[in-house]
Image 1 (cartoon, rainbow, N blue to C red):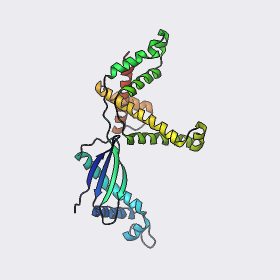
Image 2: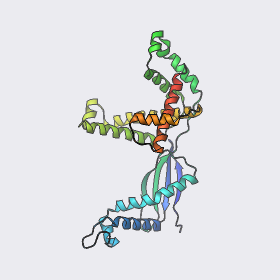
Image 3: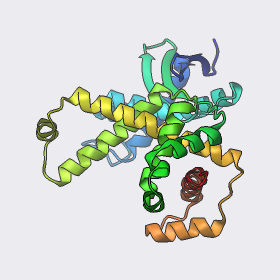
Image 4: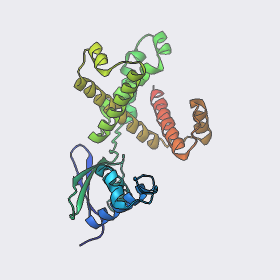
Length: 282
């Protein structure tokens, strides 16, 4: 019997990727025992000094699902890293894991749902963006109107042209993640205002499924635009200077200057630069 975790990947329609891990039960059992021993240090059992109780008694005090989650939290990351390298995957998000089979003395199966970033086929983007800007009322109207046309209006024309013309298939799981994030932000705002979601929906004359569908559409477009602008930034070989990143962090008022934060700011600035370039095509 193998003592290694194995994995199989399956690509779904819509861009999602399933990674199914098979974990030998001996590894599961060992990870659970290590989890109980780790948690025992902080659990008090009557009649025993803290951290000195028999592990069997400690295990009785810990919910089984917590032990399983913690144990799998040790086993899955290295198994995922190996599968990603083996299959040359470029994951867009960390997988959502689900226990498929977890019987005693049998190999366990865990399914992780994730996706890769989709391919972006730009086409002749400069031509159709330029055409859209020239055909819009912003450009074809009176000279005074052209001179005062707001950036927001131009952005709207450019973004619509990109959405309508650039080929890109957004994985469903990415759309769901972004829609969930938007819903979470809404709930947080409503909570601060002391409002209930039900009352908000009633005032808007909407059902929960209507709101969810709207957010899914918004999420799909937002993800598409970010990916398209990032691709255009690469196509135009756009660079962001370190001082631009530092200035953006300073303006944001954030004290986070980690490399991860700087990479995020850099990607945002590149997309903004790409949008500036597109708006200037007329």
